[in-house]
Amino acid sequence: MGTVIPRNESGPVTYEVVEAVKGGQVVEARAAGKIGVAALGSTTVLGVASKDANTQANITAATTGNTGLGFPFVDTSAGLVTPYVAVYDHESVPVTFAGAVGFGKRVKAAASGKVALWVSGTDAADLIIGTCVEPAGITAADQVGLVRLGR
Image (cartoon, rainbow, N blue to C red; front, top):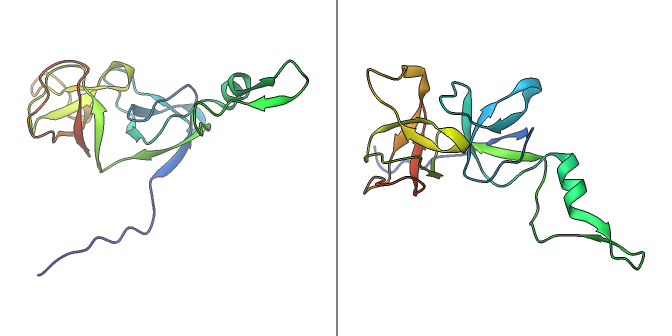
């Protein structure tokens, strides 16, 4: 077989958030079909948020007001933040790591929407959310590197 060209007919699934989510954070399923930042050891990880999102109540309160002269304003400095966010899964995406992880090693959800090394024989298999595909691996906490999502 020669060259294979993938055909993507649909994009990532979009969900409503229950709390502020930053693009690149690992997210998990929450009640009522909504999502939030994944907790340490989450088994309901859906993927990685594609952009920043916040609840509708927080967007309205934080981004509108009055100039003092009676004219309304909308603060656009935060960009186009909405209460919905597309979630990438089965993709290679940049994610913040909670600690060192070698190239090709499996990862699990860590606190604050980060990823951590999955430990064979210690961690349950259902905690695996992907593989570190950062060529040099990750050498310290809070470094950003590529993770290939998939169980």
